[in-house]
Length: 113
Length: 113
DNA sequence: GCTATAATTCGATTATTCTGGAATTATAGA
DNA sequence: TCTATAATTCCAGAATAATCGAATTATAGC
Image (cartoon, rainbow over all chains, first blue to last red; front, side, top):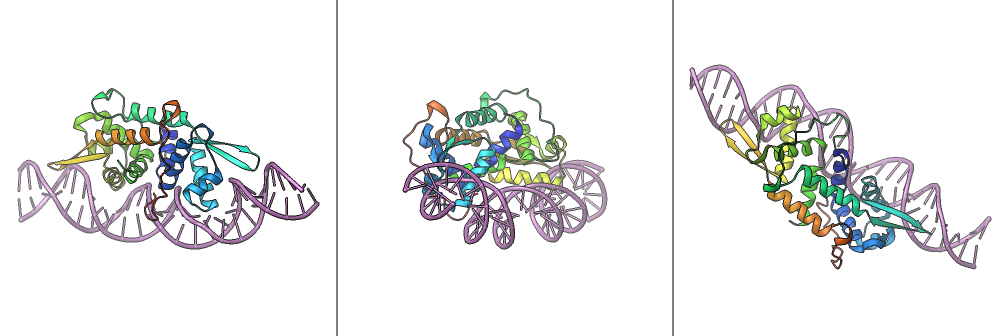
């Protein structure tokens, strides 16, 4: 995972509704949830939920599969692991921190966020 | 760490410049860096850097101490550990995930983000 | 083809964040 | 006290994100 992807993943999770959605999906396990089930849990209007899901999708944190009329959404565990690994490697805390990494070059003008 | 704090921390890190700043501070270790040193590394205008630092401060990810004219900024490792713990506990990935947690109640109207 | 249901995209509005120049505050040293 | 330096706050404009009703697309079943 590179910095760009980490920023996208962090941004995707930095919203109460999206974090809640992601947690529901993690808790739901391998089968995930349909969009409708998620909607019942989170009580969001359809367009709003879709917008949030699109952010999570773009960040690669969830994947989905159409099953007939229903779209089943799943947490992408590998992605979350990659994010945790990124944070641990690059932003790790306390005594276990490995020094010696160079300060990253400044981000490119576009897409800092 | 509660959800509110996690959202704040994730939001603080979800920006290229702030993530870069935080990484510089982690890499700098216990002594941290002065704001001026950070400015040299990141090449940001003073007001912009201060604004970003204020976000990191509000999220509790960095702390600072005035030393004469200079303000020395340090990464708060405990906070990052708490964030990693939060993500691991609530959004953990793959086979090690502990099921059985309940889907969180929907966030309050104000301050979802 | 028709109807019903699931979910999305479209489009417009509102809210929030980002950015950075200029003015301000804080401190050190002469 | 005066000057210089460090960093901040203030403020406004630009950019981006959030929200969600209405229209649209996709699919199933008859």
